[in-house]
Image (spheres, rainbow, N blue to C red):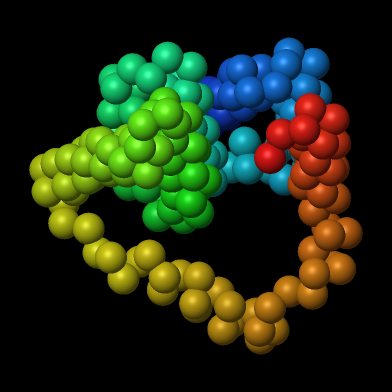
Amino acid sequence: AARFLMLSFSSLLLWSVYQIVSKTRNAAAALCAVVLIAFSARYVRLSVAVMGPVPAIALSALAMYGIVLYQENYRKRYLLLSGGLFALAVLTRFFALIFLCASLIGIFMAGRAKTSAQNPAAGAMRAGVWWLAAFAAVFLCISFAVSPIDFSQLLKPYLLSAGMSGAGGQNLASWLTEEYDVVVLAVCALIFSRRENRK
């Protein structure tokens, strides 16, 4: 049952990635991204692990898809849904906070585009406030209803693992050789963006 649940979240992750890339780029780029992720060695390992981070990543990707939908038609419900989903992702695993910067950048860019003729900064801030309000509401409601959150777990496991490894940080060259599939994804994204003159 646990492995089936992880497989469901894994499928949700692939679907979300496909939707995001197809809406921001095109179907060919989306298919390429999904295939590269599906054949990634780390993705396969994480998808069969019962206690893996796949649910948090899938919920984060779904939250980003909500931001993409907001960029299309500027309906506030997509912002609220995205903030709520991101709160669930963070409550699942705190490391999902690594997606916070990308989410806020997407929201602010959408808010600026919506009010480019008037006051772009105000539009960006307004969209960000709505998203953060939804995030805070869901996060606080669930954390108080289920059990108090121990915020020390945000950094402690990562600090402990860094201390146990003995090395202060992993060498960039060795990381690139181990995570070659991530590098391929990044290079493909850069090529697609460069051809279409997108930031």
